[in-house]
Amino acid sequence: MAERSGPSRIFACILVGLGALLLAVAVLIPSYTVGKLEKTPLDLEVTTIASGKGSVLDSAALLQGNATVDTDVDLVAQRYVTVEEPSDSEIMTVQAGQTVRRTDKRGDTGILTATVDRVTLDRVTSMPTNDPVGTVQTQSDVPGTEVPREGLQYKFPFNTEQQSYPYFDLNARETKDIDFVEETEINGLKVYHFTQEVGPVDLSAAVPEAPTNKLELPAETWGVPGGEVPITMTRWYTNTRDLWVEPKTGVVVKGQEQMHQYYGRSANQPEVDVLNVTFPFDEETIEFQVEQARNGLDQLSTFGRTLPIVAGILGVLAVIAGVILGLRGGRGGKGDPAPASGGFTPPGGAGAVDPNAPTTEIPRDWTTDQTEQIPVVDPRDDPRDDPRR
Image 1 (cartoon, rainbow, N blue to C red):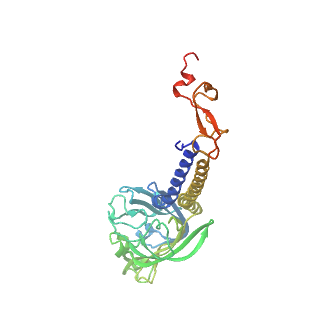
Image 2 (cartoon, rainbow, N blue to C red; image 1 turned 180 degrees about the vertical axis):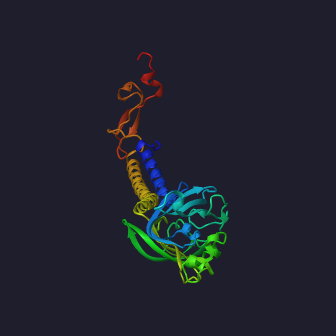
Image 3 (cartoon, rainbow, N blue to C red; image 1 turned 120 degrees about the vertical axis):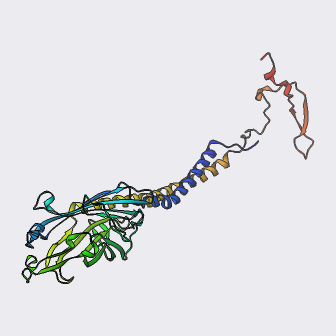
């Protein structure tokens, strides 16, 4: 009789097939899913706040003929970042509204600077595409000015390395390298520390449309010798920028800027401070950024490591179990079981043989003449066909 496929053999095949599928999943998840996750999300919405004490030029007093600089002023720098159109699977347009204000004055009188920056970035490398060209708007009633750029700004690339990166400074409108300093930790999270030196930059050349970047006023207004002799002062800018970046996700966990803007007749001769302050991220911002980085790391770890390992282990176990079950089923499931006595069982059961049926002689032992009479049953004589039964 032909070999039968019992339930155990079918189940063994299912286990082997499932195991092979799980092994394939274990191989494909890291290469496919992680690549999808290593893109800056389009629902990005981040507020960063930095605060510090510093020196500020009283612009109202300057217009009245007295260059007064207020010291030890509480200052706050706030930035709100969202995603706008155009954005798709490869690029995203980031809009960042940024203000610097003094907290001792209310409303618009306390605002020192306000800008709206728009830039389109690659979602993996975080580098600007310049398609479309980014814009910077400094006055609400004036359209933004196109400002091409080549460096990073709001985020580092995924898998950031210990090297220098080009970084765009919005105030100077120029790109300079930001250099790797060291690997350290913030709130138990491994981060890379980068630093950048900017300036002195002539802001009248960088942002010529701003009339206050070069002023001609009497010497006495500037507070320098010369009486009423007109003195032309240029506004200069320097900055020491420090950023701490979680390398796997590229999230900027902590930032600090030591910013100095001043008027002077030369770059190396500050004469009147416009703004002199150190702005570090506050603790709430750091905690929020750490959480953002951890969430990204958890997703990358789940799909890049945990799920492939679990799927691989389950796949191997399923294949092994299926092979073992298949081998066991193969040894015990061939044909029908043989009769225990070795005799012949005719159709209809053991008691269905007619004692008067004709017989034939079959040698019992090929080495002797002894024979055994075995009834020969005619299928037509099957008792089950007898209408009397």
